[in-house]
Image 1: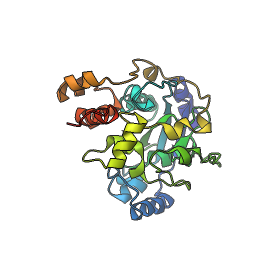
Image 2 (image 1 turned 45 degrees about the vertical axis):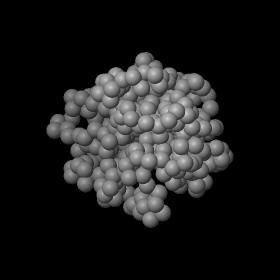
Image 3 (image 1 turned 30 degrees about the horizontal axis):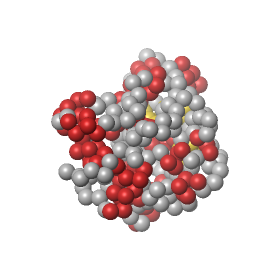
Image 4 (image 1 turned 90 degrees about the horizontal axis):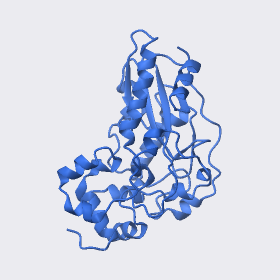
Length: 301
């Protein structure tokens, strides 16, 4: 199987953005990561071992290429929603893995002894860096990967395999550097030089467990988002007039907003059951309830 046949199959099942990344090690990325760590620009949610983030062989010894795919999730604007756009749709971990498995099943039908590992935001490698290497998109100052057709409203998944596909080339461009994402970022997380302090990101604050600072509480209250933040994407010119996702899984069963009375009345176990197919589920009911009480200016229990 060659790259052309692989991409033709991906296109046939709705995946329009697909490319092949090399297997590194990614020494330029290593410098970037170590610089971030030195500056305190990390959340603690990242893979702790730097070598695992820059060398695919640490995860799969016989890896020969990495198939990288982007999955658009834009479903339009809804000003009354109290959830980030990516949380309104079905959990991308589930959807992305299902698509990646279809790709692997297809390759297995024509490639003997095909071995692979599938990752959807749960692997050690930096998925945005892989998407850049695979030519899927280019970096915005807001640290998002921007695609020509879908802007930055994409999820990224990848397949590490023992089959050697031809490596694609990165796109030789960046965002237009208008600076709007930097200007409108509520927590001033974006530094304007393609770097960011993730601890200042409002999306991180809405996912942060433990005690919040007064400033963090004020920012969550002002933004009115129970989980996540879309501001740096909403103001980005590259996201103007992007199409609604072509993936049926993200167009169906959209949750516009969470209701406080409902969340307050159900148990933690019921919350897990009721929202098992949503990306915000992993942080649990107490955190969601806390954020809602901050927004509604209720006493936090």
